[in-house]
Image (cartoon, rainbow over all chains, first blue to last red; front, side, top):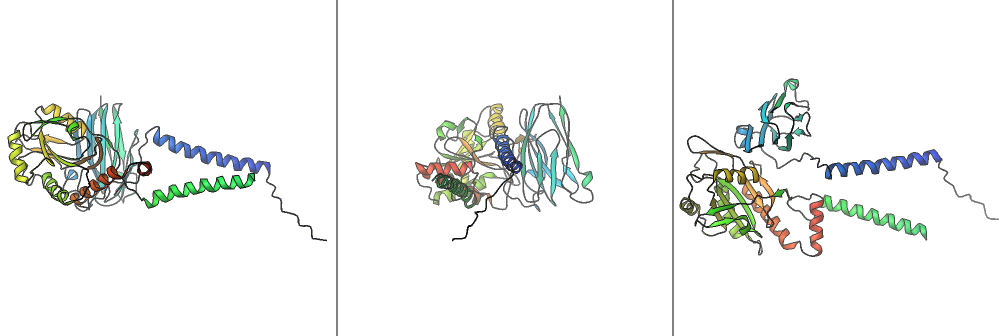
Length: 165
Length: 224
């Protein structure tokens, strides 16, 4: 008589099955949301461009005179230099409806750049240039802050974009 | 039978995912990003002929913007252009034509005759390195400032404030790379290498290989 072997039968509780299903559905949903938001809504991921030399970046080229430059009516580029513990420049004034492309780099330690009311939210690393474009439709003051801890003066590191009507 | 089918399908999907990851990580093909369309323009070249961007369709074009009275300490972008011009003369790019294009924003001073003397001084002998200038300052600002997004500003003494910028445009008129500031890799080396990457794509992305190149674009396999 051969021994009767009971094949182990995996009994999964119906509630557990539902939870498993729910977690898979959530994963799929969130993956779709990332894809949709990046392609359909054009959310820009800050991209590290080519590396610069943080020791000389403030001496030559566009960051030697950081600031706002007008490319054409309503179109600007802003070269911003982050350093301990200030942004150069720390006030940028444009007219409502303007498009500003920010090129930001650091000459010392790691900083951050977050501009309220826009999707500009960047890490500013020495040696790298962070670039993002924002359009200012509504007049007002848009403050920007360093949101990566950079030393004892970190809390004094802020500035603003003034959008005039 | 049905179970075999399910396992087979799962294995196929898994293989596809692994293949996609391998493609992204190993990057067997690298391309330059398609950034945006380059602006259209009509300018006068050093012989006084009208030239437009349409004349340069099908050619890789490297643009820079300067003025002929630019002397040190003015950053002379044509020094870089000259080095690239010499390197390209020795490079093997197959049958892909490459044109260097220096556009002057000094409408008041730089006439075709001035451009001609300037080009000769830099050793630009043929149409592989072209020089051009506009006639209407406002229209030129629209092309260079708004279109190419390159800043320049006349000063009171007739000189200009600007930084050297190089813009690489492909044969379809799409901007593929912008060089706006000095990096650890010298500009000449980067630009010559990128022109090579672009020429390779033009030559090789035919038939089935085209799909692989499109995959490289889709997965952002960009040449550093």
